[in-house]
Picture 1 (cartoon, rainbow, N blue to C red):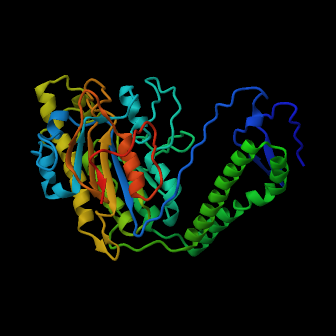
Picture 2 (cartoon, rainbow, N blue to C red):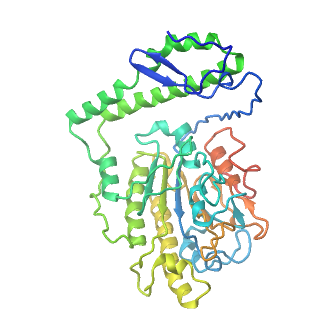
Picture 3 (cartoon, helix red, strand yellow):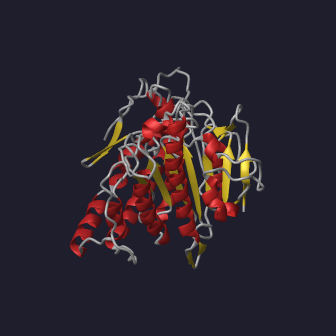
Length: 436
């Protein structure tokens, strides 16, 4: 049994031990000097419940959208559609365009990709500590009802805007064929049993360390006991998820009336890869295999194979107001927005016992860059589709004094029934976007 002497500082790397198991502890006040100032913060959030499945899909772009081509004229529902929005007019009553919004304190140009869904400032040099992204926050609290708590996807590259509690980036899956296999191709019964056994072996940690943990708790102050209990509660939640993972491991995957897609080999075919991945995501939502999806479109440098485009995408985004580059860039960005519209349109065509899939799915299209040419992180493009909102047409905020986009994240969390009134630098819920 481990003994602790609280006449001296408890080491940060202290662990509780059971037979063959050691578990590191969270930060406790006993780990600092006796008279040191306690600067630790504690966050709490509620978990709501919904009467029918609700889903969230974030599509994030590494190179933004040219502002004058996507921002409409006028405000509210009577706005005049921009060049990019013309292809979405049949969805007009089910989308909201937001202008004049950004993440307060976030800068760094391309580096701010890390902040798209966290709204945390990580500094221009990437030296700051990131926080949990909104998709992972939702998956953490509400993702235990599906086989996959969340899907982190990309059309290429190795980065994503998805971050864990500890600020670690989650690498994306970029192969639609592999995603399809993960979702719908069943392993043999022997392999499923083996997977369930591997999960089962990891579920007894708390039992092994319980006696040592109780001894430690008796020697701690009230605040530390609460923190330790919160920590063990999180471990118990992990064990619960592992139990669910064991159950999923032995269940067969859903059958779909679709063939496994063939991956597009051309790494520059941004639109084709986007479409293929969207098709599989739609199947994942239809089968309720997951409810939280992020799909990142990185700012690759090659020529997108579209008629009229002859220069690399990244080079076009840094157009410097060159008319030839702007014309080619408009072709690429129009195609991306149109594909986003096709995704929403396809969701709207699917009805089941729970209702219309688009009405159950809030989709966000956005980017860290409001102006890729000068690397500005202000005036981010924001398009919200579907879900349980009363769509407002065009929410036009100040182009100079931007509105905090994290307010939308709070609205989103509350739409999901969570008793949360703060996310990152939010100041409340989003003005003008009501929950239906």
